[in-house]
Image 1 (cartoon, rainbow, N blue to C red):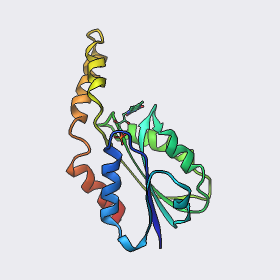
Image 2: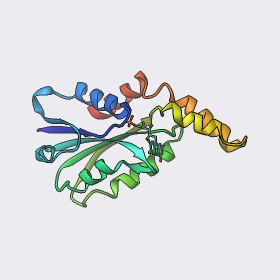
Image 3: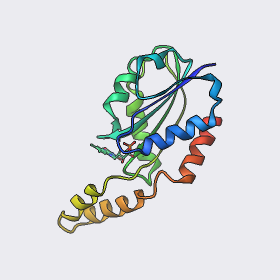
Length: 160
Ligand SMILES: Cc1cc2nc3c(=O)[nH]c(=O)nc-3n(C[C@H](O)[C@H](O)[C@H](O)COP(=O)(O)O)c2cc1C
């Protein structure tokens, strides 16, 4: 059974997840690993990784997912806001809206991913409020992610 790993990553977080997926699967069966590209569509199973943009997957991954027909797909992603499985589930539901009915989702995984320092600077400039405090706390929580435990959980989910 051939597979492809297709991912989009602006600042490297989702690329770390893609590398963990690659380390888990047998090299010999890998048809493609890299940015969204038509040659990946020939694989039986696709491992597709995205970064979260405005509550759903980035546009490059959305466009790619819409091209799938009968393949199996494992979806993984990173998001700046973490700490809530409900939030991740909501994102995943939106991502799945890009899939045709014949595409089978074999598994999903999400974790938090650090954001650029410029984002913290922007939060710091906001007037004091509970929302500002929450955004700053979330930013600081994200700084260490994806961490080793996040990658281990992803590897478990892929191996399952
Ligand atoms: C333009 C932009 C929009 C973003 N929108 C969201 C969002 O709606 N929700 C969220 O949780 N994180 C959001 N983020 C944070 C990223 O999804 C997060 O840092 C992710 O781990 C980046 O992955 P990458 O390093 O693979 O590019 C956004 C980041 C950028 C740059």
